[in-house]
Structures are given as C-alpha cells and as structure tokens.
Amino acid sequence: MLKKVRRIHGDCRGGYGSPRVHQALRHEGVRIGRKRVERLLREASLVGRVAKLYRRVPGVERFYQRHKNLRLNMPAPTGVNQQWVADLTYIKVNRQWQYLAVVLDVYSRPKHCTDNAHMESFLHSMKAEVIHGVSFKDEQELRAVLRGYTNQFYNQKRLHSGISYVAPAEYERMAA
Image (cartoon, rainbow, N blue to C red):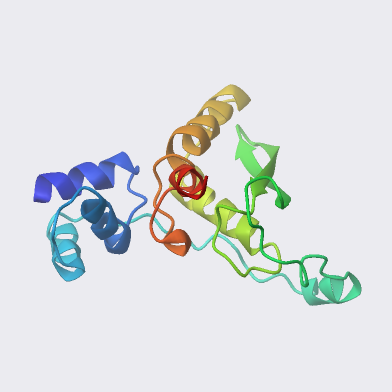
C-alpha cells in the first residue's frame, strides 16, 4: 500500500496531501480510509506542498468598492465555453519578472463563485505546486514547466475537490 501512496504522491510532484491521495486511491479501486492514508504519508515523511503565497494588501477593498462585480448575478454555466475568467500574475525568472496571462473556462470549476475565486484558486495551486521554491534559468524553461503542468497534469490528472475529485477534462467528458 505504501508503494501506491508513494507513486501517487510522486505523480503529482508532491502536491497532494492525504485527502487527494485518498481520493486517487479510491479512483484506482483501492478501499482504504483517509486516516490510514494520513498515517502512511506521515510514516513515509511525505507532505503535500502548500505554500502561503499571498499577503494582505492594504487598500485593495477601496478598489473593489469602486468597480461593480459583473459576475455577481450571472447564472452558473451549463456547458463548456460559456463563461471565462482571466487574470495576470508574475513569476521571477533569472532575477527578472515574467508576466503570465491565464484564461480559464468556468464550467469545469467548482460552482457558485461570483468573483475571481476560480482564477485565484488556480494561480495559488500552480504557484504552490510548481513555482514556489524553484529557480528558472530562462523563459523557455518556465514555459515548458507551465505547459507540462497545465496540459498534462492540472487539466488531465489533478483531482479537484470542488468537482467531486475528478480532473476537469474528465468532468467535461462526463457532462458531454
């Protein structure tokens, strides 16, 4: 059992804690309790990567008070490509800042969000799982890491708790 736990933890680059490792095992047909998964992870000294990345920024409430929330009264999307959210973030590469623009389809994200929570959640997961603590030598290396994370892991394999612990690609296939 420990081999399976180690494999799942390694496949997600150490990003899964016990709840997601437990769900991944269940997806593989393994019957095991979450507390046992916790114990196995603890005994193997495996810890999910979580980083406190954001600090409170003074005065940000004033900005949001002046601008209306356009998503507040929008109904939840009923299919793919109906609502999109976007945001910018920055990542340090070789002592210079690189800017990353991200666009997400809201359909395969947890429901009932009326602000940019989908995007903030994605950016936090991405930074905690692949960016935090890593030094990139150039833009090409950063692009390769981000492409691999989004195309091969986040959309295809990563279990999302807000959509019943399935990957977004699987969620969209089930809905089609």
